[in-house]
Image (cartoon, rainbow, N blue to C red; front, side, top):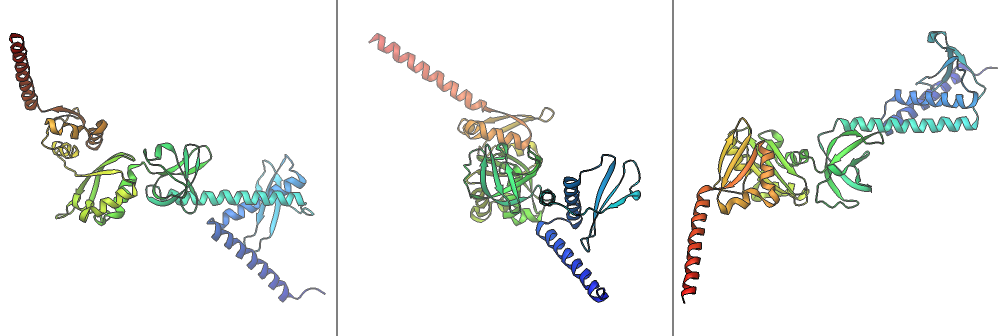
Length: 360
């Protein structure tokens, strides 16, 4: 006596519900699509069949799974012929080793699909900031925990003088997705100038809204940065907005960068005024430019010369990057003449002293 149709339909419904529920759960937990999981299971089934029964070189094989019930079917067909000529294979069962192979393939493929899904998610976030934690050191690279996955920070993306520590929490710039020898990896950066722009966008509402625009950034990561800002809205002071009341906004950025110095100057279409501002804190300087060759000769008073050049030439180097002009700094001619005249007078006075000493 066969089973009543009611119980048969209930069994099918239960199987359908259990498989669909498990499928949805995997997709939800791993963040991957159902069709990817189905394709992975089909590949695992084929691997298991090949392990137990082998493949005929003259045949092509495929596995098909019903996404509603989980029913699995194996097919083969002659190579070179259309797939519609396929025949179903009904093996008596898979062995323990074959089942293990199927499980390994399934887990590996799901991990790969999961990683691919995460990579695609972070690909959409390239060029933005992300909070992360220093997880470990792998040679010159630093591995960062960025939430759902790990990112790598190569040496060139590390701020020069910063000392990183395990479990240190920082803000990182998502520089891109690159193949670094271990497949595609998310690259985080603390040296990219995009980090500066992102931090000011986070701390300064006027930058976030677009009322103030960061036009140019010149940076020597871990040491000093110059940014040129411009106001797109009448009545808004771009420099004041970025500095904030009592310097609270810029100080928040400096703290995140662990003490990196930041010079904020106002962008100007006039290259002479722009170069003058870029060389701050030096004052009373005279700028002569050659627009065609993109060069500038800057004359600075003696007491401003060292400020204009900066320690190790850093100030003039950053100003050149910021403005796009090759800058040559010279001492003001008038000061040179006064200094030379003074030197001559001192030499004459010294000679007179020597003569008097000889006579006496």
